[in-house]
Length: 313
Image (tube, rainbow, N blue to C red):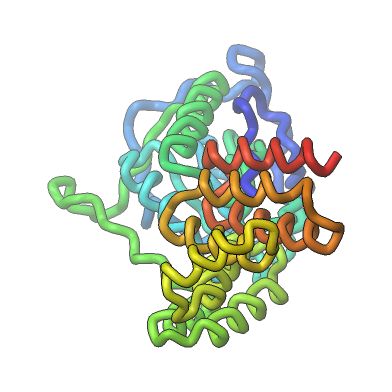
């Protein structure tokens, strides 16, 4: 699940860096407060750095010059976040922290999901979101962090040391799939849907918050159910047996596979009130799978979820 704050409004986020955090920074203009950063950029080895329990104090120092985005990840960092930081040309530094290797930082940021993303401004932390954002959502969050940083006297930039100023911005390395995801992908390409299902189930067993594995499992399970059945046979069986749960579930699978979500949702939600409890449970479970396939932000999912809730309660 992706949790995004409605706005980034102050430096009192939900995280506590405890001993890693420097003393609170006075408000701009107050005695002892940091002054506006100079316009000259500070040279850094890279705009994307590995953050660890051992080196994080240096990253905190850097946050007095430029906002630092911290991503606590498991397996591989998020490629879209790296692209966004690189595209901003030195207005941010991204510190990526592998949580399993850095328990002190995981505890300090209270990271309960991977990825967890926070910002550090002038040594002070602020929680941002969990999961992954769309490019538009990410742009909005980074704009809010920029405004907050400026309000707290952090408006500098950084440049990569020894970099050719005329060279194009480096492209991030394509994010590899986690091992079980890659195995599932390979098995899907080979037509081994049952093998792919087993791989996704292993990924979920290792990390129940792995939403990509949950969605992947729902998708490949749909493919496995359709198998080699013909479209005509599926639709004929559904038309001949309008109250038969399995026939209606299978034709709904067919609708979803073709992108006709409204047809699938409407068919099953119309059927739902006429069913006994086992039938209702089967339809509810299948609808939840479809919601994972389509994504929680899809307007059709939002409408169907609301209608399902009304039927349940």
